[in-house]
Image 1 (tube, one colour):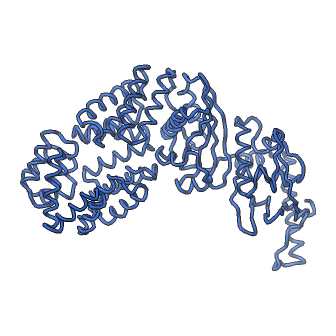
Image 2 (cartoon, helix red, strand yellow):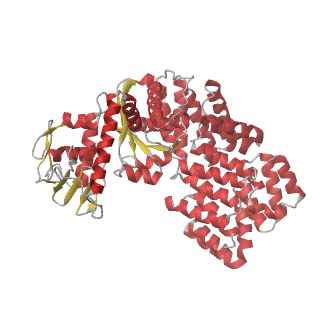
Image 3 (cartoon, one colour):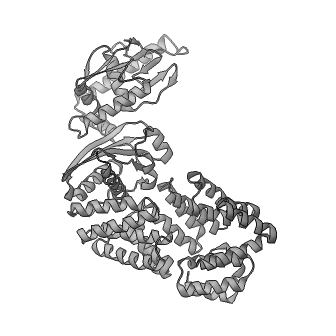
Length: 612
């Protein structure tokens, strides 16, 4: 090196070329994506083709001494990824041969270029005196460095080391579903539950945006690359890991991977008694948060929980996230059983409260029951632990839709946002609250933040349509509804807001066609016949009568108001007010009622509901 000669390692085998300087693998000139650890393994094998490279040697090359990580699993995963990139097979290898329990050997012919190659001088570089000047400058620089070293300026070296060790900025993170290694499919709820808990804890602790559960669960067992996942979720890094539960012990491994480089920034393993699982979660979340954030808000000291209660709680969370009527019923049963097992376990009360409120919103449970029991469970959760953001969000939502207590709702939303700003469902509810107050720009911005946190959530996507619709931004609402329906063409909430947006955009025929397509063939024919026979007004009146008989008073009132039958619409809304229908709070912003706003009876209704 003293003569200006460097070592450039470039390897060729088959159609592949590996440049060890740039970390690039190409196949016939086309770049092949390869994770950093897999690339390091490939270079290690190419350095000694035909020789055994032991598993211990590779592990030492990939992980620094003292790193706690599941070496066997991590190494196997990296080698498998390398084989996929090369199109190789473990059973009939062309490039990489496995020596069971020993290591690996590169078996293809390898040619190496660039040994002791002097750095190229650009063709247009001046020669003669300029070259001598360059050499003089080099000597001068070397002399300065020598003087610094001779003077004992070790601070320069320490500064350089510190600069190299500064972690990359991670503003957004996703936790990929932890892999269940228990060999028991019944334990899948346990792995999913720990994933959910880790997401929640990370959201509480730092300022990074944490992708919500609904979106990351799409990647359970995925074969997509880290870069693909990171691009789809718009995050800087991901956490992946495993869960093993055996008897009373549970072991969790986790790795932090940077998306842009595929580099493993950190890895560790945790093992506890199941009764200490909350402490395990806390330790894991704290270690990750310290790696990605400058300032970490500490979690409260974890309490010991009865293993039976914790298992039932995780089953409840698992059932809740199915977003089905049956799932919510099962969630309520599991949460109640967890509470019976451990009456002081606050998260079980919070889960019960959230289930009641969501199930009530979807009419899976009678509104009065959902309100009464949901509020009681949330209050109990906060009595035990005031730091549960989900319980504050539940109370805020109950105050908004059921109590019409706008001051109380504002107070609880503020507390929830302070505790967990990365709760997509909480921000989704807060957006609805802002819309109901007529603060439409704020509501849309809030719903967009919820969508950033949970980009694949159906309800969060659909409710962005709602926020745009209530703001009378119908073209944007139509576009957003269609994006939602790309995720699930039959999602009723999105279809409902799309139909309203089409009507108010003047695209009545499209709205009618949508009603037909969303109905059974027999119902679709009846809609078409009514529309052809009496026009849209007649269709609205008949629909209103159908909804009235079905007890959907606010929906029926919408139809009559659109048909111009103001007396019938207001009569239904007044009946709805006497029954305290939760949907009544929307009349303040609902475009369907714009024709009633000059009516004194309608203004009195708004006064009773009381949005400021």
